[in-house]
Length: 340
Image (tube, rainbow, N blue to C red; front, side):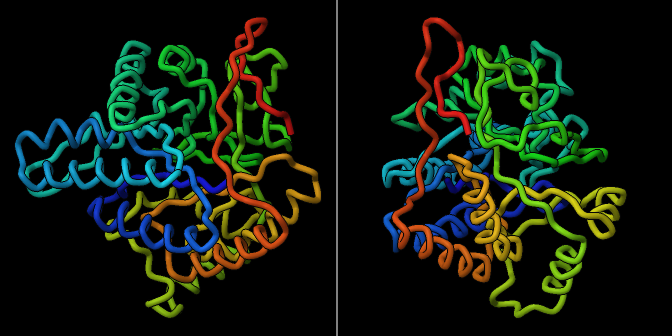
């Protein structure tokens, strides 16, 4: 399963949807088309809501909204799956007529009141579903910040969301913006849960379809940094034209000095680990393999590695799939999905 978080950047420069979303996607689609493969796009519906609101005041933003909506509809029409992604800080952020100003004081959903959470989740789901033929049923939290899940569970359930795909085993971060801890999550790919996505519950109301995880040495991040500094610009330059939120100094120091868990990703240099991670998942007999990425962070170099991996997968009889539609069990509220 290949999943992409479809969004802008959230640093000093958000970039444009044409470069961060559409350009990167179109480059990815050329690779996927060689195998008639499909992907899952987690669309940042909070951006869509705010873009629609501001489009009434700006011809440029009205054009951006039209471009993004048309692209999302095209993705679904081509057989790709669209699911829900939310970065709630969009509801605190604003546009001055020239550019977006990001306010990340309430970056995590759990930082909002339950009433606000219910309202903004409903607005996001309605906005996204209004452009789709198939309603969303899977959620991925912005920045993986899905905890505490108990604060958002009711809002998701009310809006038809019964599957989460935010957790990756061993992952953890604690900065001014990002905060999550998946170190207690099971080394599995799929399980039911109730109020804690890291704690399996056989009859839980939700299903976690975890992002695949891999254990990497600090040398990987040193190589990553060197490639960014000295790699061939035409192969290692990302498609997006914005700037990310800077990593917290504490988290960055930890990555450069300790082994750590990383979500399997096709973003840039991270794609070099894709084949190894897939082989590890097969070795552990996982029934699902979920890689992720961001159209804004894709590079020609990373797409080359994705193409090589897809050649291997499809030559051995495998294929990319979307999330299975949950079956509502009348005897238990959880979706009936295969465990792994």
